[in-house]
Length: 619
Image (tube, rainbow, N blue to C red; front, side):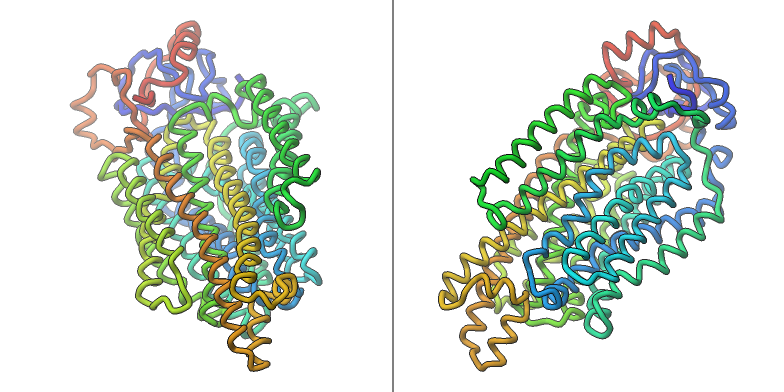
């Protein structure tokens, strides 16, 4: 057992109760008790049945209300600028393509960001596990700010893509870092509400992004979409430096090269990152830059498959020290949550990029008006995210809201495929409301499920893995969306405007070609190009619909995962002395308990036979 690890047990036992158990939560070691240094790091904690340290759900073990409020406020600023950065670009893309005279890099503006984020995110879980939460978080924030500066100064489309890649490297550790800090700082009973607030702030960033981006692009310059990140990020850094982070764990003071390679699983990362990059490059270039049958794409796809296979074998061999431990991802609740969040974010990012493009090209909106037209999506998403945070503890189960949300997201994406240039306002507003409802209700379910079924020292790795699945799914879907968009645009131009050269239309920019044709008085051809764009964009929404449907079925893997409200003291006193939860009962409520330490042999047997605590064993 590495020094400094802390654990919490998932049970519904009174804090004063002492019950021997052979149950072992995921991620806990087999030693009989934690080192004294860890026990001293968390006051008023005791050793538990399988060697974990149990934190009370009280003010002595977590930040007080004032400190927690300041900390959560700073985390909300970070979440806002991240989601602002992701959504602010959508309304600026047509203007960027006009300035750089190309639309072939539209997908890269998002994919470069997500590619770097997805490649690095699993490693960030290890960084947060072994290093200071505060300074690791600030280092990632600095990388994000540097990338924003490069984008603001970009002189070419390629330089903008590079800036997005650097920003993605920094962003790779921010969301999972914020969620890890929230888990450590807030009592379990407050986490669903605080998580809902964080999700609402993410929705606020998505809401403000198109509005701010549209206003800046139209009235100042699209470059201010990136300049705006610098003062907000600077203010966040100052706030984070001035507040006290909660103690997390005792860390190593001396490192050897072998420690670094083993603990951070650098060999696994060296295989994992290139595999991600090769796959995303293949999806980005397929059918556009290179034919699918070309040696380049065959090599990239083959290399990524071989790389991921090698990585999986290595992770299995590396055991609990792996960057993505098998003991984590083999859990039904965990892998179902990974697939669910991958599908949810993939569908969301497709709509975030291509719906504003539809408003600006097909409807002829300005950047600001296209942002206003997307308000129904994000307003309903914010509202229902907050409602979901309040309803989940009352319903008690994660599955109902997850299925409800993905059902409405599927219906919404399907309806978006029917958009036409003459679609009425009532229809496209209603379609967006359905999608906002669905995503708002279901987005936080996978995160709650994963964080509830792992021990405290596994939270950074589990959260980073979930965030990786989200960003990797987004990058894959953006690449597929870009490929689908350009291929269907070529097909649409051949059908609706065969007299035009598709390469010239693509090279002119998303809105320039229509304006140029109308300026010449050729309104008929302009309308033909408009219909070709409508044809291409609506076919991208078929991908979003497929993601939502896949997310619906993946959500079923949450099963009877249960989230309960904090038990009252009276109820706990009544339950005191009752038998431990029976095998097969799955509870993901993060309650607290104190119990005695069982022998290592019993723990080993429990871990080997069951692998997880019966309190969280799937039915």
